[in-house]
Image (cartoon, rainbow, N blue to C red; front, top):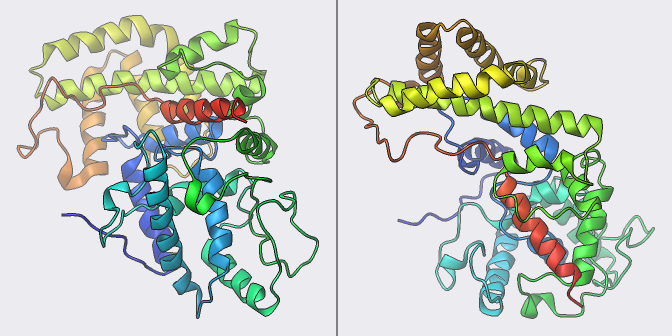
Length: 395
């Protein structure tokens, strides 16, 4: 069964998506409720990037689409979203038909059908557009509604070749709520592909590196130094080697990356123990891996693991006390206390859906919980930057 998107009012949409986003973070099986710390580091290093992002081109096309939406008349802000979705569906079909690579085109499975995806491009990319300073207000539907009224009261001819650095000093300019690239050179409504032009890549680089939200981030550092990150499949490989090159990180950024890496190391160990408990202590391989992790990793990085969670300014759900308590138990070789903390933590987080000791869930050693290390949206960052860098060579 396929589900279309249900159009709530704005306050309900925000609450709904907040819940969904917690569940859909890429590779984020979060049985121990450590996702808020993971997301803290992800946002700090790569602001504006979501694991749901597929292609950098959407950061170009959606602002153009929103400007197109202004040209329609609306009775209320509630009427804006259906029009956005309609324009998104038209754009999806164009992208699918004209792009060589079809993977990651949001909604392509619904071409020619009545339904549409739950999470349309706007909900996937709008936060990034706002954080990169491309979208100037996060109240998108209200802004388009207001801009539409001004547009029809006082039409102003404006297209993608106008100055994207402000468009106009006219306070009545109906398009001021977002920026678009200059001189596209093609009709985006009929000729769009996933490939970025040189101008579009330069536009994205300018906005990402110029955004206040992104200042001091690893994302900006990577872009400014034109760092080649294609050979680093894992975040930990990148973090372990980057400071040994000409791309050496500034001190504060180095601390952020080091803390993130140490937090990932801690999570690796906690889930090794979790899976041993989930197996009802029958998977001795996981127990041996955990003990080896204690000897090889924890003994070397435990101070860094503590630093990675102490004093974080986040809206915590108990993840910080849990992590610190687990570190103390491991330091004392008190695995009974560690096990009790893990079991209690999972039940607090998952409640009736807890897996340890629950006959409704079967442990599979081939597919353990949290098999891979925390990546902090690294694969998504690599993909988007690859597309941006590739676009710089396109004329």
